Image (cartoon, rainbow, N blue to C red; front, side, top):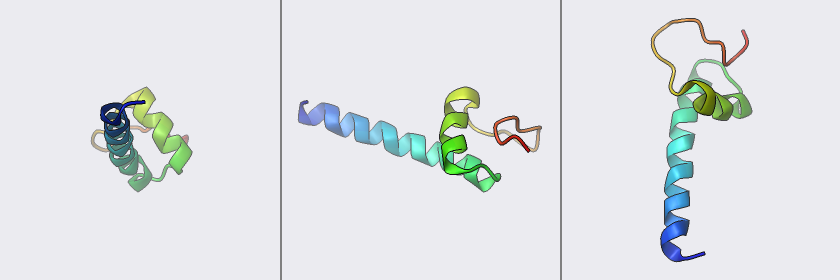
Length: 54
């Protein structure tokens, strides 16, 4: 794997982590938070949050 691809993958994972931290602030566990980013994107407002299951 070239050095450019490694940095790209590290940057994508760092961005994914930053987005997942928004879900953990709303009460999701870390695995749920990472999946919520894929399924729902970022949390918006105080609407119902189906990602955390309660």
